[in-house]
Image 1 (cartoon, rainbow, N blue to C red):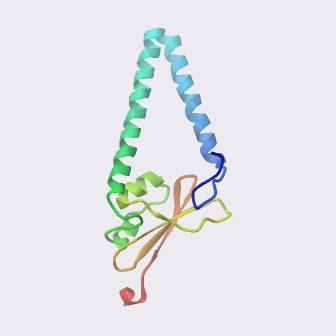
Image 2 (cartoon, helix red, strand yellow):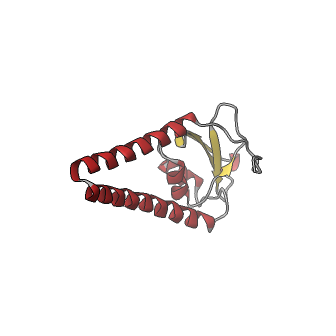
Image 3 (cartoon, helix red, strand yellow):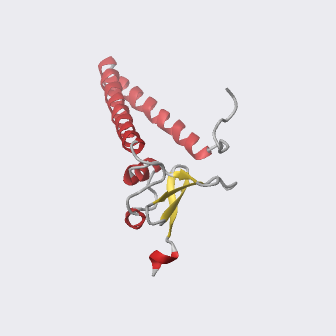
Length: 148
């Protein structure tokens, strides 16, 4: 079970680990404050609200994955339009939802960045670079015949 069956090595991501710790700290603080203010009914209310938020997030994630599973990996209808709609700082999930397809992984680098590529039928492609799950830059590559 300790081996990585995927093509790319697993990396230790300190930013995501810190984010996870902060999320759990905020959850614990909300539950503790609700207990202090309203007692056990406050704990039930805050836990219910937090669980609803988690279910909404999971529901959105499953919707994105379900839509992406019906399309070929790394394919978009128009790479130029996809490129025009990208914005720095978007999450990988949001970019995947925008593309309506999972990205094709590009060779990993030692700098801790993740790169995915989406292409269309005209051989134009967009390569997106993510750091800590956020889009940091992207590049549109068009074939010579399409540029003329």
